[in-house]
Image (cartoon, rainbow, N blue to C red):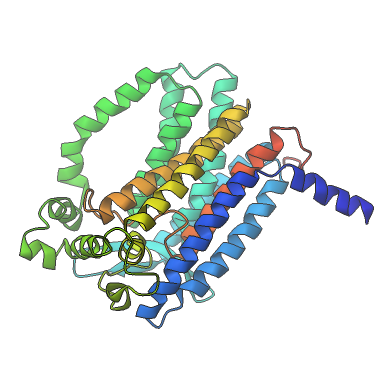
Length: 384
């Protein structure tokens, strides 16, 4: 019994309590917003989110027990499972289509619930790509163009599979995770400049040959929301979200008091447009609080990443930072009608079991880095 409590005490001594507090704060805020949204439909988003948070914290705790270097040793199993999961989703997954041209097959059914496979693959990518970067840099090969190409090819696998699933929003998030992790690993800046140049060249090609008609319509709609035809058509969600956010003014109409929330004026307000709920019911203050909490959380993740001298640990933190930061920018940008609709959630706030749960897994990997950079003994597994 003494040994058990001693191990519990050792575990509790090496937890980043500031990061934990921030994650718990955003979790509570999310639950309050989703409790309000639940008034609009028969679906209980509050219960679903609470269940996802509990599962997420349990998974995060388990991930902190295994040294992340041990996880990295099993990169080939993790990579293989990720590819299988994405391919399985493409073949046997659930399709979502609508009259606007959306045709995505990025979800699978588990126990009567839908699960977005790319969310779990983000966790796998954090581990496998961190291990890849560690191997390249430990051998002093980060300056070789061929090695950088292989790194980019690594990132292209989940990006390409997401595109084939019809989920380009997830593909973009993988790209920004790749950028942040490569930067943290010390990849030469000239390769980033080269990539930027190639991206500029690729823009017209992507527009012409890659983007679907509905995606092009989203780009044009965001800058023409004052056109009544656009506001009733392709720009409907953003137009309504902008009205909801503006109607809250400085302090909002009050939590659980928003009439537009109750009438479900903004479609998908429980997920992609949760920011509009905060804007209407809690006003500018509520929106600012969301930004402040996410900013502090990202800052703490960066601090933990910079604090460790271990390359793989630093890359894991950078991957989580890129994931949360890019989704925050794109989600709030589309809610404010500054960016086109991309189908990405607001990290930790949006409802959605798979998205929320996997974000907590990512948080668990950051806690893992915090614990083990102090040489705390964890569960070590031998490589097969």
